Image 1 (tube, one colour):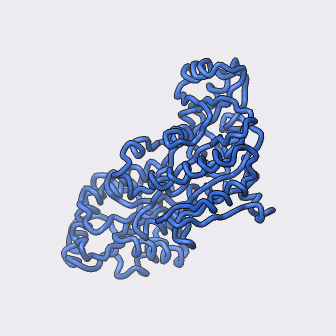
Image 2 (cartoon, rainbow, N blue to C red; image 1 turned 45 degrees about the vertical axis):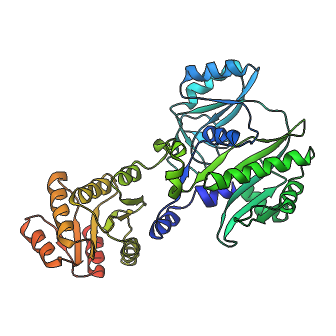
Image 3 (cartoon, rainbow, N blue to C red; image 1 turned 180 degrees about the vertical axis):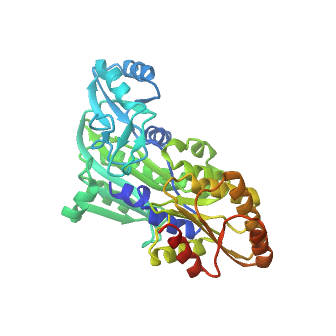
Length: 417
């Protein structure tokens, strides 16, 4: 899905750049959670019940009470319908007979679903959504996200939805409507009408306009980075229904929406990134084999570049910040070494607020307590650098010291050659 690709399933390189600019805004919720928030905001959504166990799924289907239900895997990645479980089950979304709910729930819950957006490892399915099967006449695409070009919210609408919007954007871009909105005044009546007409709504236009306004108000009121509905459908009575729901939230607004942020599903995230957040460290896992520990996002980016220029490949982005304590340095080493791909570690510190002797103490304690089995290359410069170097020299540890960044990168690459 178009917005999912740009605003949710971002590449790791983009996420690194976001960290360098001051933080990643990436709280995403599952469909069932997003649908509940939409419902509370006045958006029409299908009746559905989330289930975490097979027994709950069977009870949910019975409560819906129809001969057929929709069962949807809940993961934080798009392309579920065309995905495949590692146990062989094809598809993460199915319309099934109610009598078959137990069979499907057993295959889906606890399984791993691999989609185009999940990565090769896939995502664990700990929840399924049992939803009422709707009689849908038309399927549209609708989304709102923050647009850098216009400096505000951008509404994207298309008269065709329910499938890959990326493919449609490539084959028939003229069918996609883009409406930039003034975030101060909100969408005008004319803009709302443009969206409704662009969707090709055949039912009550005024009711459709109210649904578009409700979705926009949700976007603003909940400090969203993205609201995506694919499909935004029209039933046989002409009512607009959010048949799918994806919402992303700005982490900077967590203090205003604690109830929303408490719903974060850490099982869908890299456990190393979750651990780093607990220690107030900025960590993003990459695909290389040289672990990096640096203070300052800009220096961290430069360090990864220099490693690459010397023929190596960084295993992570890790910024310990300017005020890290010894315990945080130890935690950083634990996180880096938890990646089995890491064959060497490069520590690059330019001490300003962060003192080199504090880094040295953390390196020494981590090396002794963790019994590090990989080479550690250390480059220190700045505040208390001489004291830091002395601590490393007197530690008796087999550490590789470097005079500058290029020297450090060269030695790190050579250490695993």
